[in-house]
Amino acid sequence: RIAKAVERVLAELQSAKKPVMLLGGGVRLSNQVNTMRELTDFLRLPVVTTWGGIDFFESEYPLYGGNIGRTGNKSAVQMVQASDLLLALGVRFTTKEIIDEKKFAERAKIIAVDIDRGELEEGLINPAEKLQFDLKVFVPKLLKVAREKSLRLEHIEPWRKEMQDMKAKWYTIDMTRPETADRYVSPYHFGEALSEAMGPEDILVADCGVNLMWMAQSFKVKRGQRFLSAWGCSPMSYAFPASIGVHLARPNAKVAVTIGDGAMLMNSQELQTVVFNKVPLKIFVVN
Image (cartoon, rainbow, N blue to C red; front, side, top):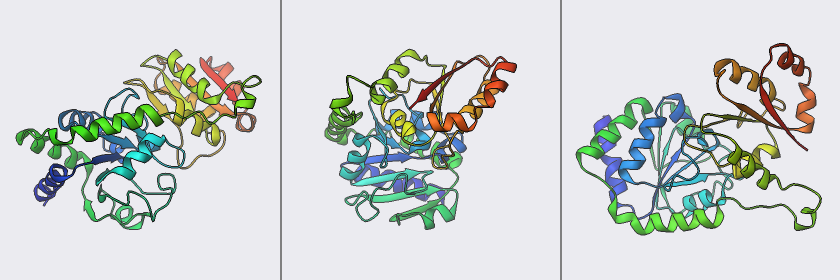
């Protein structure tokens, strides 16, 4: 059954003129981030992610268009809207990704692969094909067969050029009002500056609300970096105590936190935990 599904997916990719792969949190849950990198490298297939996949690829990766949704990168949204085939792996199709379900990827055939039948049936989008497979089986099989067929999708070079133009134009758009520039730091400029200051082994933990949206749009992820948040759950003040846990799990990594002023107050008592345990956090309160 999986062999036929893989053959069908590869045939669809070969016949599409503007294919895009959309990756969600299920890719990490199935431990397929590295295999997915091998697959995109081999196929040279343009890729976008949901919030949950924001650190699968470095921002400079030429095949990566950004993360989709109302709080994502416009470049990624435009890629999805221009595509004629959308291969979605481990995606829930919720309001975080879908701006308008009636117009989402309206020119594309959508093929969704997920281990959970409920996610395939109950999202805002009704995919043309719903393939219920565990990604830790499906993705390696897809890569294996693509290599056996020497499938490199050379015919979509014009589409790769088009998506790279979209990325150059729309990846980060500073929405700060010009009249505030002399009084406030642009949060988009701050996100870019913070990403420049952080190394490839460092970890960012972002809180919820608009400060998370700013970071998701402006922080330039390096290869190997982790960008963590509660994402669709988005409880206020998650990031501060979560960052303590991140330090305990990765004590040699530098950990930075971005958090709103209201959220910081909600768990300010954890400052004592930080001091008592000598947790070396870098905390940025975004008012």
